[in-house]
Length: 262
Image (tube, rainbow, N blue to C red; front, side, top):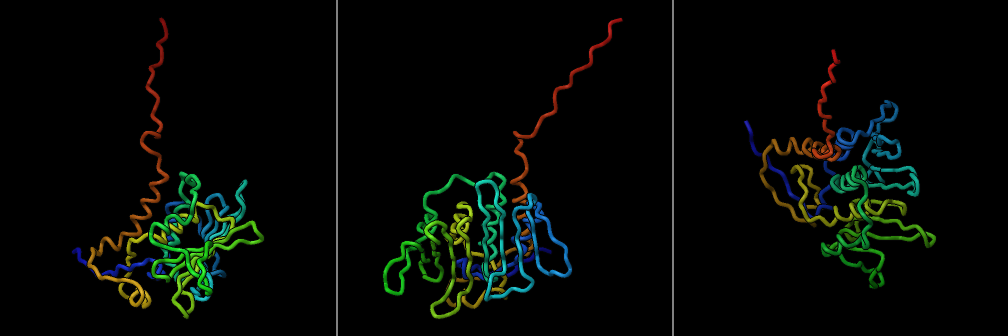
């Protein structure tokens, strides 16, 4: 018989904690045809794109002190090889924003002018250095618990570092995007950071930091909705690849064979 269960809504989303890694891996495998590696001597998750150019790896054990997720892509034409890494406590919904954009069959959208625009619209601002000066190369969340920094190497390549941290405490999680990461993936990550929609977590999986520094509320929802959320997400992503009704080829009209003259 259907029943309701308690879930916790967490904002801001960068404090929500890891969540379920299947939110990223299952759609990649089932909706986007990424293959899995089978190697009992390497108990890690390895998913590879159909064209063999992209690979997602999860190390065997989450380590809060170093990256757990790594997404790498080989060079392709004018696009140089690139990589993105995420620490273990990165909310899976933020990671999924990047993988969803990467696997979108419609391809990358036209290049946006200002990658920081989604953050500005959400109230993010230029952070201050220790000397009190504003940093033109970064953005900080309104609560100052998350920030994005842009660094330039040798005057050419630009990399991005996203960090959630509390003053005088170790970073909660970091993401690193190297300078060759396609701009639409950078934008997808920033939009996910700026999104003010609460993330849903099971009560026992809510980090203490979310309770002390963020905003949480408990709500009852259908147990069926929670159980099938991943299935619905996977189906929606698979639908992106389905041809539109107008694109479905129609059968040619039947033309009767001419009769032989007697």
